Image (cartoon, rainbow, N blue to C red; front, side):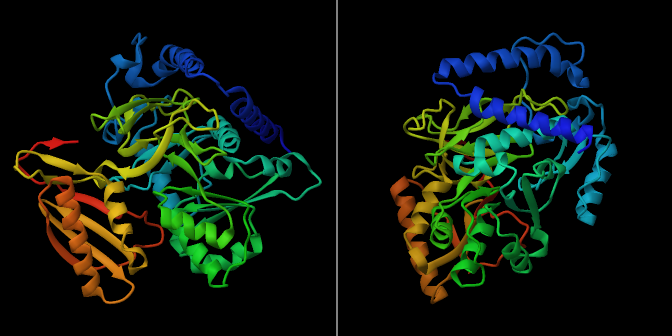
Length: 452
């Protein structure tokens, strides 16, 4: 092993130990004190390395404006400590996407593209040191105790991880080592061609978007796949209850979740099955969407990053908080569900026609789940006061459309909103590399204010 590779391995090991064993707080006050110390250092010593913040004395996070993907892309060089412009890095990312060779870097900087589910792709930058620390943090937060000996005992087989995603990155392949056999499976090639290789790989850990996990589960239940992973992680999409149940039925393991985006490693599932925000490495301000403070959009500041500054960055995700603390004892905020993106919320006028009221994704999903196996797939796209509902039914399509229309109108009556004009069509599968978006607000109804 070269000296550089050995140093990288040591960084990952140190990051693993620190994240798994030292950053375990028993009181919320301890966590917040840790965050405050990290933020002071970040604001004083790290943020001024980026051109946008040079020459500024920043002591208070709240004094900084909010940013989002458009802000970052609009001043790309200003938000990274290398001064790299978008024109310098974008060709590298696009060439990797076109060639499917994700190994080239710009010096020691990994350049990647986000998936662009919000309508425009973003570019992220990560240094080699950040990749190595990230690998340790990810393993510390997601690897169950029963698999730890596979990392620590050299006489046992290496831990085998199968990872399905649209694009690979050095951010992920950093996990590969003598003790980790990491396999990337390219979703742009389709699911079916990967089954033989996956069978031969026989992974201990399976990581994939929820729809891919569902497809693999169906292949296993049909007898075309016989892998037996002992740990399964859902990434990149909302994990719905029926997906989780299909995976559990096929593999005998309940899937856990990783909440990861190009903006950072945002959350993980603990041993009790609860999703927690990664607040040991991020500061997260909730932007509440309702008076009862049950749902929020996260505003994140990643005080662990040194290359690309993510500071008071408003994500487009909608998170629903857990009603009670998790029994695992962690004080990092517990999340009941990642409901989707803000533009997964649909809007309809109240009965007096004075304002628009929000119909949250989980409310709509629960209504549609009442149709059981009769409704196999669906999507709802809203334009103004019209909803286009595309579905795949188990039997007669027209009967399913009538039943679904009745359910949606009943839901509207229950919520006190005017029903939309409903149009129905046939559901068509998206390309294998595309993220599932069941609900999508394409055009907001005009002339009325929104009330969450």
